Image (cartoon, rainbow, N blue to C red; front, side, top):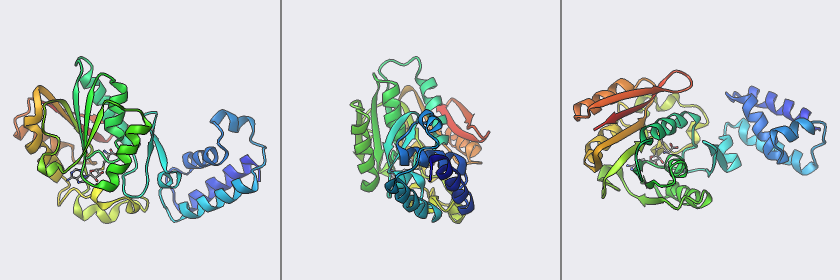
Length: 279
Ligand SMILES: C[S@@+](CC[C@H](N)C(=O)[O-])C[C@H]1O[C@@H](n2cnc3c(N)ncnc32)[C@H](O)[C@@H]1O
């Protein structure tokens, strides 16, 4: 089987299995199996796959047909151009979350040596990306569950993010609120309890503790605003990723807590994905 044939059969198998992004995934899989870049694949598409490569492809497709997340199969995933270890026990970084990164960088533009707090850090994709993009920043990340924190720890090392400290702690107990921050960011669990059954088959393999946001999905936003408002500098900012349809409610939580200005940012699908507020 040559590379072109492998790509086509992978695409078909993924489409049949119901994978949403089957074209993108087929490309990623062929790159992973061959070790080639996009350009090398185009130049070498008639190359035969070795037996080893074909066996790996078959094994990988078997897992993917069960809708096991591709990110877990690879054991790593790229987010905002940086590579992160991922696997069972931690949420896979999502492209939607890059909207929070873009907005955070814009909000931090005029700040010198900013102090940043990333709550519910998971793999560390938010905190580490901000630390790399703003090297003079000092970033604190808080993650409750050791299984997830272990990935964050490895990702700090992988990305040589020397300006990041990781706290294994609980946001309901104000972990990390021991200093004042310019920016507090979070992509917390935000799925309402009664919507947990509707998540994709891939998401069912991810930890429930990374997804469940209480009865209405807003438990974590309430707790963070209440517990961490006093950990903001005088002109501090909070910015959250929110679930589809949650932006208005989260803006109200900010207003009720006395924040001056609030705003939202749409993701690439036109969904209000980020809510931010200035103290
Ligand atoms: C939606 S995931 C986000 C992970 C990462 N920030 C990202 O964007 O990919 C939420 C994370 O919050 C963590 N978490 C859940 N409850 C927590 C708590 N009470 N305190 C701190 N972290 C918590 C979960 O383990 C999970 O890693």
